[in-house]
Image (cartoon, rainbow, N blue to C red; front, side):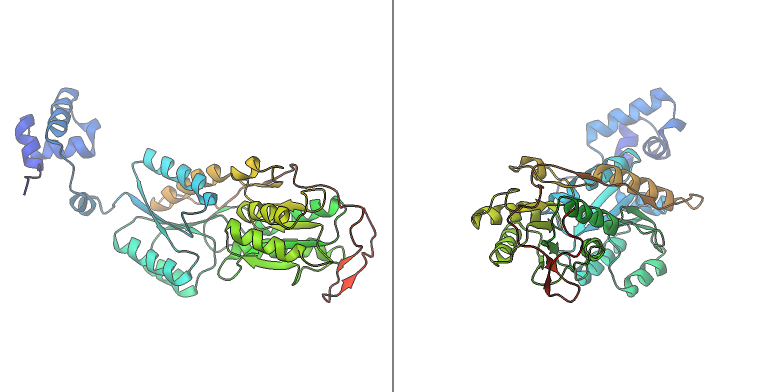
Length: 358
């Protein structure tokens, strides 16, 4: 087996003590420049890497942070994680990433695994997890920050946005284009507080106009283009089809546009479609997708700042609400003149719009 370079090897080549090598690696400002250069040349020549476990024991800190995200297959999380990683790296902290596949039990196991590996803190997506998990985190005195969600009365540090308010704004804008037969393709709301809040936001906006959001105009689907396409085709197969479809994210929105075309409908002349998140695909579609812009990179940077502050016993932490913005593009248009009147009443029955067209 090849010999792994040791601290003693570096000290011998550099002509210094092992204590001096350790100071160069951990507190270089405390070492004279000429001595530091000799040690650094020896480290490079030998290809020496410090022993992680030893450094962690010495400092009582591993300088690693764990993040558990729902999936790596969805671009929604990419920008936020990239910014998080960059800012942590600038502080000398390494990011470890695990996925839960939108499964609470799997997320709990990943949290336990990361903490067992000695991470100094965690980044978790959303609030929806069992009380036992929060009790476990408290028992381990594990700092954590919630991302992609924000509530004024949230019990934990969070960096995100108000999913309810953002989705409500989308629905109000769609209503402003004269639409009354409005459907929604939502993400699966079970164990997903972000998807659930977006449904509640749309429902609240429609309720203000005496309209309801219920089956068959509400479909939950996995965050896949194929699922969005299938859901849109189901919605548009009804003779009382919707004139607008609000989608829980841009992946579902892209799928809905594919499904609308497959069903023989034009966007937005026959049916308007909106998304949520403003990932790259939103601008590449034809027409481009009207959607909610979420500043994912800013969210990642602020999450890094909060988590680094939480590691400091003297640090102060304040949750951060990030503003979203509705981006109007070509997929949202006025309700077609030939559209059937009315929508779903509060009891789920078909009814005329009591307010009339805007």
